[in-house]
Amino acid sequence: MSEEINSIAVQTEQKGPEIPQNKFLALVFSFIWPGLGQVYNGQLWKGVAIYIGYIIGLLLFFIPGVVVWVYAMHDAFYGAEKINKREIPYIEPKFTGTALFLFVPIVIFVILYFLFVMVFMASMAAFM
Image (cartoon, rainbow, N blue to C red; front, side, top):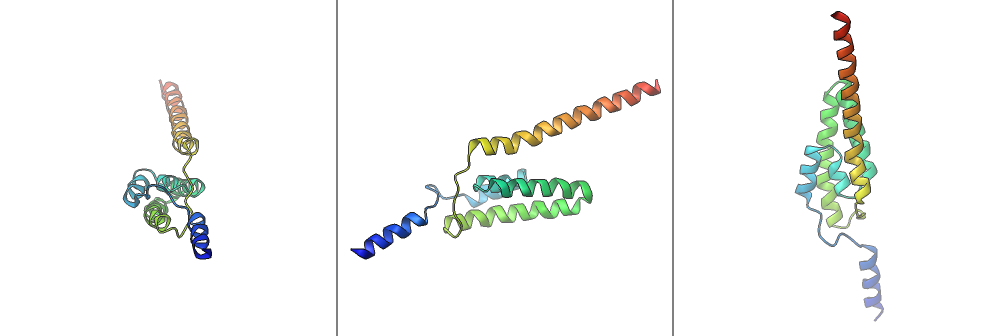
């Protein structure tokens, strides 16, 4: 009887995802958008850190950004595998966190793009 209780306690402690994390999907997400694979695995802040590291690496010397991108794919793939083996805890990804992870960089990019266009147009008008 006590063995059944212990096994039930262990099962509840090692709660994982109802549906196993697809490690190839996590890899593809990180290939498309560095850090998105981590967000898919429920590691929002890790995904944010990877994305920021990727952008900074690209802006500085390009190669560090590529290294962070490759790391993101590796980490997302093996992170999903560890979640499925219950080696690390699974955290259900929240829609708001994922949406902000995607939305905020796009908004920043659009703002910077329009600022660049405005400065370019102003400089072109000065030459005419």
